Length: 192
Image 1 (tube, rainbow, N blue to C red):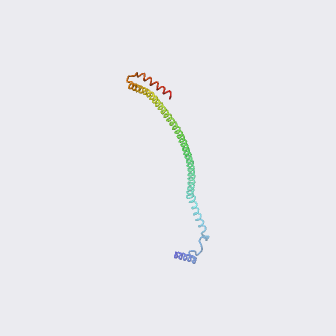
Image 2: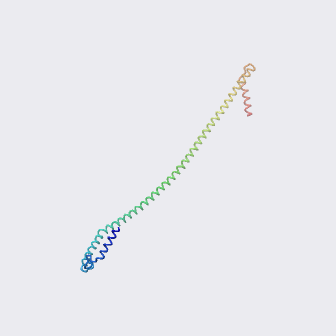
Image 3: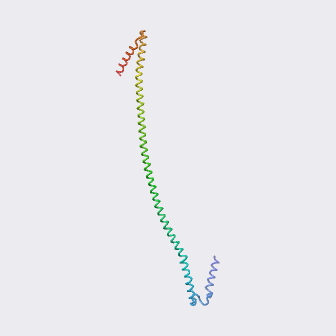
């Protein structure tokens, strides 16, 4: 780096110290003899540069700018359409959710009603069945009571006839003993 700086300083010193480096007469750009040629070439070069830029580069730049602009506009329009579609889908989704919630509530209410009705029907069936069984049991108890009273009367009359037979040692009329036992039982039942 130090050598590079030293070489650069030497070159500048040589250029500044030696003014006759190819221009004994002076600068050719300032010589009026060459001005027309310089103006001609200046016009040719700048005109050709202007035409090249105007006909080649500028249309490409303009096309790129317009293309970008139209692409941005299209992208913005498409983004707006997508946003609107997304909002529509969100609204549809929310509506579907609300409808599903309403339907679920309706199903729950209907299921509760049906379940309660089924429970009531089962309760009624059970109650009817229990009442029916109770009636059957009461009927059986009454039949058993009647049959047991008849059996008791029969057993009591037979037992009484047998006891009398053993005490008196003679046969007694069983129908008379049965009538007496029936009278005694009827008197006892009236007191109850």
